[in-house]
Image 1: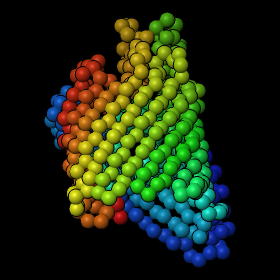
Image 2: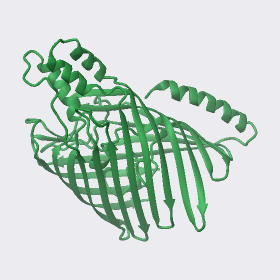
Image 3: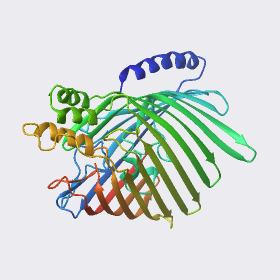
Image 4: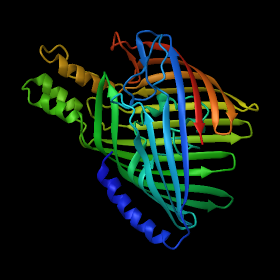
Length: 409
């Protein structure tokens, strides 16, 4: 992610915290660790399945794999003052380059100037999952993984910036308003290549109703691409070739200054042994862009606790509006390498996939759970379910078996 905003923010935060902490008792430090040890297998030998676009390699048919769900995270929480605290989090998981080096996902300070008002500054995790402050902590939700049909459309976990949260009692009800703004970067893999958009400006707002057993949330946001990143050299190379096909391809792949609008609706019913969660997301792309298209994504999951066992069932799906998937380079002699790169970028923007899930979670002890899950997946176009033998295949089906040990201490 862009380091400049995080460094400047944290420098100011450290000064502010030092000024406040000098009047307080010694800070309270609480370390934590979380992670997932996962195994997956599926039956479609020519297909590869990833749980996220941010992963380089997926589970191949007929082979046992531990790379798509496993991760390890360390977290440090510091209470510096009655109204000042902070947190830092690093996570090791498979990245778009195939590496597992830990990356910083949280590094923020939280200020509470008055009751019911909070300001956070630094590297902030995105609240993409209602009822949990991070989709990386598998122990916090019933299933083995967040549904790729829903969350692969959000290939970022944090922003460098600020958010402001206000809790507002209205009669017997409680509402939470959150405003956020910051910069982030997107790192994804497609067609065996890594793509990076290093500078994306994100602004958004969330309004949440917090009931005793029921929560509703409306989210709105805008993401603007300020730097085409890994696509820029490809676009420039195409523009330098004086052919109509290359000029068309350059236009189709140019994402600089593209604005994506986001709308989300979430609901969570959690009472006694039953938990029901539903989400619906809409990504609206610019009208008239020859390649990018809008998407609908949704999920519904029901779980029911029976002592230590939590069986669950779910459905999820994603649909990309029809748009032109051509790059403009098809069949042009001598440009095969550029065509492969361009096709990978175009395919990464297409997600038409659905899945049915059934599983069971067993609580081994406080902070540790074992999960078994079966997914039946059908994709017509998908960046996470790819056909290794025939990339043009629009009927990709697989049955995925997964097991995961989640822990959080």
